[in-house]
Length: 261
Ligand SMILES: [Zn+2]
Image 1 (cartoon, rainbow, N blue to C red):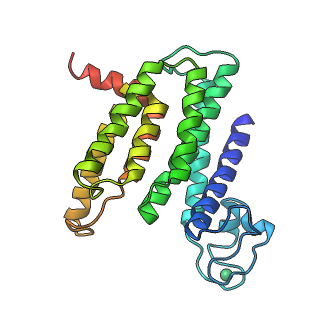
Image 2: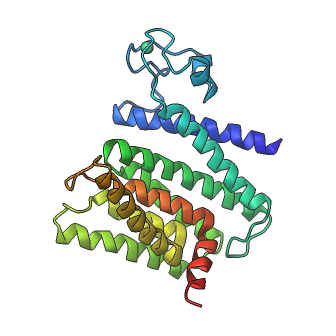
């Protein structure tokens, strides 16, 4: 029963993430007015706005102008629901998390992860669509997760070291290439990864993002869907592997270390 509630909560947050992505891109304020159809500008009624089900009920078309609704909406909603549920189960079943927490702190930990994955999903979609990692997503999250992590008793030195090393990694590239290889948003993303995951898991997420980026890049080249000039939205890979390490961190590290024993 709680699981169902968590899932519905997740898809509602997913629905909100869609709104943030599109309204940020159109530089409208988040709360201004009712949601409208992006084609005919007709205000949408409440039942059209029900996450996932509204889309299914309308068969993916606007009620008023019949234009297609982006499948990004239900997909993001559904995925957010699944991810929220996954993190809930992780703590519900007391799966090893690498550092000791109990009682109220478990709730804080879950809250931290839900906030973090919401922002990571935002960065994932936004960078994929518009090739930008926005400071308004990263900077408030850096402050929030850092405070929560300090409260939860994570190693201060690990968090700071992670932020400095991963952020610094992008900062150096930024200066060397005069902003051509990476953008300023990547630097803030690096800091966020360090403050969220700490040094060890953060560096692992960075490394995995390069591996994944290379694999996807090669795949696109091989299938001729990209050429050497195609820009890879790296924030998309960074947010994906950060989410992965947030969920699986301990196991990924143990598996990796086991390769050398
Ligand atoms: Zn319409």
